[in-house]
Image 1 (cartoon, one colour):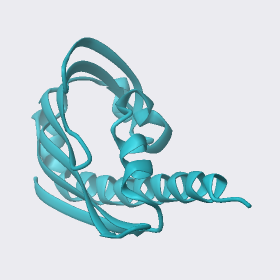
Image 2 (cartoon, rainbow, N blue to C red):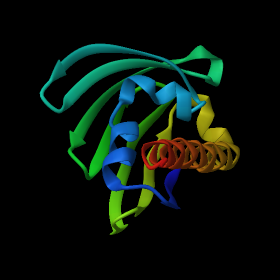
Image 3 (cartoon, rainbow, N blue to C red):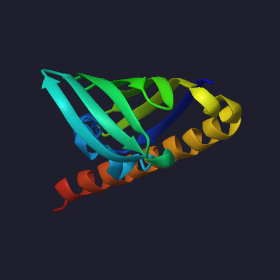
Image 4 (cartoon, one colour):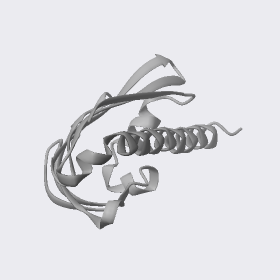
Length: 147
């Protein structure tokens, strides 16, 4: 399939955004393509988990590595799609950050026939997830700064 890059500037401090993106147990709240997660093991900043994705309730096996206040890297090892998703957080100013998502994925089996449609779907889902994360982060920031 290939690579896909999306980004969003968010008006919130880095720590607030990091708390959202690193809480991978809540991925279904932001990433609607993920219906359910189940951690298999957690060792330090590495999480092995199974996910159920929206496409035909398919099961995926993933390894997530957290690089604190910087990157959430996901290796998708088994499932209808394999590859990587990297979510990188960059501080622009005290109360503004850039959140970037880079996918490098391959469809497996018959899904290869639908690469274009699948990439379009993942692109839209990623943009929507970035919007949901931004909304949550900005809301949390404003709640902590009420006078």
